[in-house]
Image (cartoon, rainbow, N blue to C red):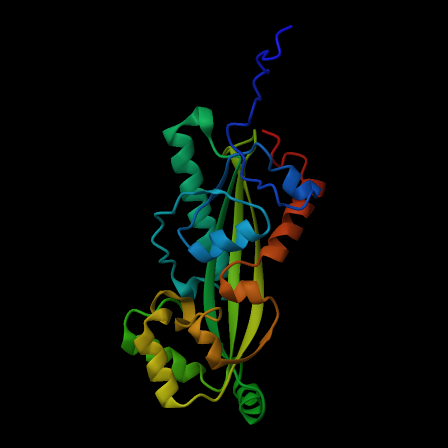
Length: 258
């Protein structure tokens, strides 16, 4: 008797972004064996997705992220539009590079911070003079710009908005479909001293963050309260993303079927 018979080979999928600890829910199970791309170099977004059991390929978008703010009647549409451009650029680039191994799903996100009118007497003044134009705060271009942002936000409230766009293949032209959502969270700043703000700027942590602060790092000492999704402020609204996947699985017959 041959006790060392060769075992049959185990056939593993070429692509699999679903990690063993992922919850066994239909939205995640549908991604098993699929080529899923995250169009971002952000380690924060990658870590958040890995926490829920997703480990997509990283292919950073080359889109310049320079859409004119003034073209949007609702400024909340700006990060969604930017995320869409990033997702489409990566999808088209990968399809062009290798049509036989094109992505099944491209995920892109863009997070911005919007200045927000403080509550109280100031809001009464705003009501009497018409609607307030929220300023978009993206990544500061210098330490001086970082300090300017934090001084403007200090003691007040800002709104963190993340647009998430998904691109996946379909049979009809142009060969892909785009679905998007946005998540909005209010961040309340403490009344911080100038010394603390200046020390934070000197740490360098905020220079690569929209709005000039990182709530999950040293920047957490500047924050008094968060209304909404904490992960959205970090950079990716993963709970809303999973709900979005669930809805697409239920409502879109062609989602991940091509």
